[in-house]
Image (tube, rainbow, N blue to C red):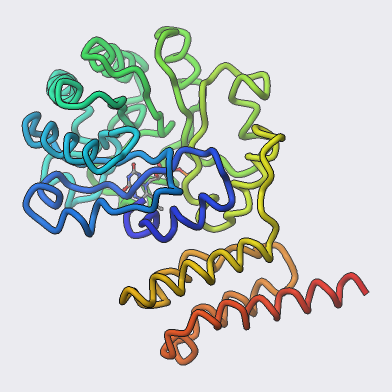
Length: 321
Ligand SMILES: Cc1cc2nc3c(=O)[nH]c(=O)nc-3n(C[C@H](O)[C@H](O)[C@H](O)COP(=O)(O)O)c2cc1C
């Protein structure tokens, strides 16, 4: 998610969910091929499995960017066919690619020829107000023939004119049945459901482990705003894997922030992703306030994380007493 799932966010989320697959923000091919590739591609080893999401529409450029991603150590390359922003539409990529499935197939083929890791696609279920199933079925069919075996389905249409990106994540209705139908029509593909998933029980009901038909689930906003949902899902999916408790997560993030600050990264860039850690618990408001207080952040001292943690821990003690 652009501006959200940067490397600091992914490091944090990995602590909360040892096995979930993490995705980068969408990175345009030009940023990798002609920009500061290290700035966009660097990640911590602990992030594996981690996928690089690309934005672009030229097979050759996508192939070169995918190759760069593989060389950098990514585990998967994902092509964005779901973003409806004006900027992305001007570049003629993101969601508007769904109207040219043959081009997406060419892009996928070129990327697959360039790398050995999986090439996957994230897409919507329709464009504008066309709700015909045939549109997305033909899109998936064409792209599947080009060798894509994993489709991450954001199960609502993208409205290209008249809705902002935010509205495009809220107004077009969610239609999970379309993802299920895709799974029935393309049983050899992996269909991963995305869009509006929040409650762990309801989320897992979509996949095999919870009695559902689909192969995976992707969480966006809930994972960002209430990151402990990642731990709750992990405990159910991989009960044998221990998940660090609150204090261990806080200590690990303090160590990480210390290393990042020593390397010139502002403390704010790390802690801004942690504001939701205690959401729905006592002390959550004070935690958020302290970690977003400009005056406190100005010192650039990772001890701020510890100070905020003391507030949360004291609130928990008071509740227990
Ligand atoms: C701030 C923000 C940035 C996003 N950036 C991307 C992106 O770079 N690539 C992408 O595929 N989706 C992006 N999305 C969409 C999410 O990945 C997801 O598809 C959408 O929010 C619906 O899922 P959710 O209800 O679990 O959040 C973004 C969403 C938000 C809120």
